[in-house]
Image (cartoon, rainbow, N blue to C red; front, side):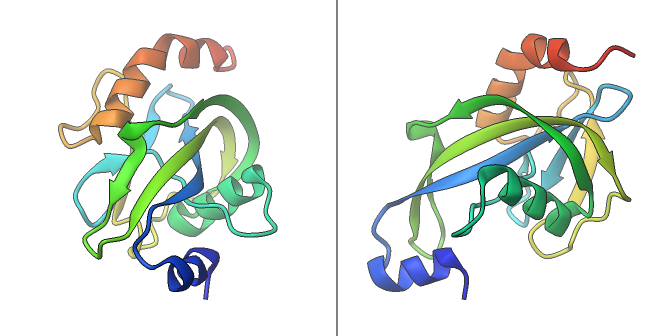
Length: 155
């Protein structure tokens, strides 16, 4: 049983605050990786921190599990929180996520969605995100695209 499941056994459906590392992975063409979950929304890959992990360790673990990539270098680009990151799942569980955003341009491996948490993974241009991109992700990517592009290594 993972940390979140054990926590839910104690608190039921009461709201909890979770740390969610999220990684904006950028390929050599300058495109960003988005993942599609079972609710048909595209978003930035990431997950939730487990007990005993650093935020970076959990980001690396989640990306490896979900899409098969091994991240080599992470650069912190932002911390995001607030009511827009409030989530109520179909099962009644309520979460407030604190997202720790990283940028990664150095990675290895073959892009391979796990088929469980992530159904599809694709790279997209900043200005051509899919119609069904999570509205918060779209907003933050567009607001920060200039700063993110400036953080990319020169070609």
